[in-house]
Every structure is written in structure tokens, then in C-alpha cells.
Length: 415
Image (cartoon, rainbow, N blue to C red; front, side):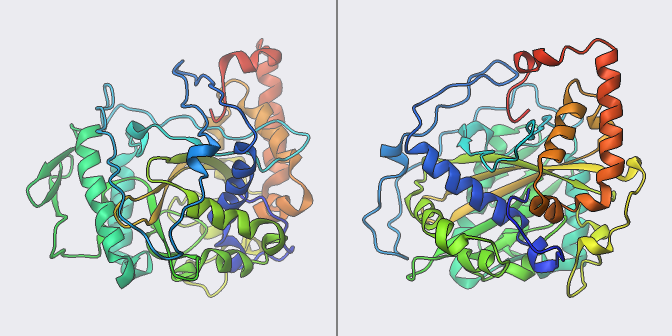
């Protein structure tokens, strides 16, 4: 999920910018393209058309409010329809494969409009994620989940949104109560009205498989990371970026061209984002150990700095994992805070390559990374083993009759 040139020695502050840097580049590109692109509708693998691109006149209208001020919006999220035939034991994760063929690596793996029903995705990995999060909360506490006093109302609003949405979308897993919500799988009943027994972001994190981050605008016009529940991020730590403004998150990581080319567009996007215009994006990267919550290959989670330099080179393919994220971005109507949900999908490469077309396309994508991106993504540590394996699996699929030129007929991005 890295798109920006970085020095060859990748220290912790670079790795911890992974999500934000990638999202910055994508948001900026999306903003520019949306000003020129006509509405289009593409079909997903299931045959349902995606929502049209949002119109510049609605999404990007310049707000008249002063920086740091927000008048609560009367927008209400539409009620969510129950997920068809959803079952916590049988509903498989969606097979997001957000990589493209080379020869060039583009940052336009862009945002798309989000259907409100699909805000939060849960599947049969929920029991594992829930257990991992509960353990992380017990072991690490405020290192992973915290809320600044000025963000408390926003965190409570997010908790209220989840408490309402989840029983609508997943009625076999959640039931709303007068004072909170009950998890029907674990029989936990969580309090979601004051006084809370724990930080509201921590409660939010317990409910879903996603990590969560809240950005609030201050009078200087900047957005600050003031609340989060970052429990399964793998490569970055909430405590490193907590309290930082959006621009500082990027300049502290020496993002090339940020001040000159990206900062203004990013801030404009955030200021203009309306509560009724949620968006989605996907990304991916490779991990060379088996840990979902924290990638130990880059060092201890409690180390002062972490780096790809510590990773073992050319580990066996059985240790290679495909890590992808589905991120949603929306503005909360009452507080005006911008909330990110970050759902991680974590699968062995040896399983992913069983899907038609995937090994060939992934090999092409990895080869398309420029040297700067390759350093940032750590390709030096796994590229030889990974590419040899992907090439071999692709050749096997072709030998078994795969029609390479038919791929676009059976799939569409980001699947």
C-alpha cells in the first residue's frame, strides 16, 4: 500500500505512514479525476452495478464554514438492509485482489462511491478477529485504542452509528439493547451510553473486524488524528501518529512532493467531503510472517524503530502472505469528524494463487514497482522467492487451459 519514493533504509516512521500515504495519493488523484470524469457504471463480479462516480458539483462544492467550525448536518444514514443469507460460520471473505498488470505502477487505484448497506463487512473470520482484538486490548490497552477529550463526541457518535447499523445489517450476530448492543455469538453485552466502562473507540474496535481512525478539523484548517482503535494494522502503531495533523503525518515521513503537489488538494478534499458522500478504496502488500496483528518480521512492536532491514531474506513461500485492505471514508454528520474504517484481509499466497489469473497478474504488478516503491514494500526480502513461485503457478494455469485474454470478461477491479 505504498506509492511514494522513500530512502533505502526504511525506519519505523516510514512504515507507520503506510495507510496514510497510500490514501493521500489516492484521494488526490481521485479529486483531480472526478473534476473531469463523466459518470460511469461498472459491473462487479456479482453482476450488480457499482454506484456512479460522485458529481463534482455535489461532492466538491467549497464549504462556506470557517476552518474548525462544523454545524451538525441533518443527514441520516439510510437504514441498512440485512446482508443476504449472512452466517458467521459460512459467509466467506470477499476476494479482493486490488492489483493490476504492469508495466507501470500507478497510484490511481482510486476511490469509488460506497453503498450505505456495505459500510462494514463481516464474514466467517469474525471469531478469529474478535478474539485477536480482545487479546490485544487486554495486553496493550491505550497503546492501541484511545480518544482525545476534544474527540469524545465524535467517538460517541461513531459508537452510536455502529450500534444502530450492525443489528440492521447483521441481525443474526447483533441485537440492540436499551443501553447498548449484544453480540449473539459471544453473548457479550456492551454498554454504549454514558457512563461507558471503557474508551468508546475501544468498544467500537470490539464490535467489528476493522481498525478505526477519527480525524478532526481544528481552527488552523488541518485535520488531526485524535481517536483510533488500531489493533490489527500489521505495520504501524497508533501511538506513533496519535495527535498528529494530516500534513505532519506525511512530512514526518519525508513524502516527496507532498508540500508542493499534494497538501492543498488533500486538505480541500477533506474540507469538502459531505456526510452523504462515503467512499471506498482498496490496497495490498506482501508480508513474510504469519501474524495478522503485528508483522514481527520488521521487528518488535515495542521497539523504538522497526524496519524491513530486520526481515529474513527469501523465506520459503509458505511464509508469504497476501495482505490487503478495504478502507471506507465518511464524515459523521453530528460532529463533522472524518472516520476511516480499515478492514484487513490476510491470506497465504499459496491459497491466493489457486484463483484463475491471480499468479500472473500479481507477478506483473510486483515487477511493475519502481525501485522506490520496491524498497518501501520490502521486495528485496521476498521478491526472488515470490516471483519464481508466481511465474510457476501462472505457467501451470496456462498449461491447464487458462485463456489469458479472457480475464476482463470474468473479473473487474478490485476483485
